[in-house]
Length: 181
Image 1 (cartoon, rainbow, N blue to C red):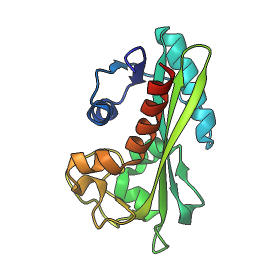
Image 2: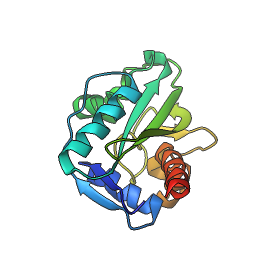
Image 3: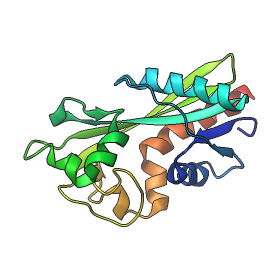
Image 4: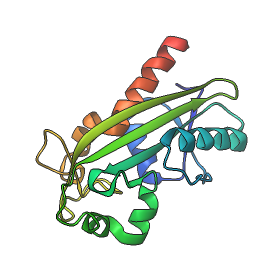
């Protein structure tokens, strides 16, 4: 993994990725353009190519889709913009009294200028009606993974980093890179 650089402008994501991988991965904090698409594969492919063009080295990039069943899959890949505009509780209020079933998918793309590969990690769960917890970032205060009673933000970071969508995708990418290097 050492020949790849993880490219993100999100300091929280960079910290979490470093904690999950616990290996000397390089992080390059660069703002990347985000195409407007609900298709996670399209978003992550464009992001990987943009990151490679920017730093001219093999890259790993990540994006997520936060799909609320009652909203027919929205906000999906637009979660960042929903949170910036409405916040976590405002986003949850859009659901109203509907079922709060939600699926979070992380996509990790690896691109070296020639070869492109996507790895996904998915976690299903529900939404808390209000913010709960002090850890994490983004939607962590409202997402309760299936099989747990607490939001990601209520969990110790070590537990979240073991079970999260991001951890699942990163483990797949790490396994692939170990086999190919």
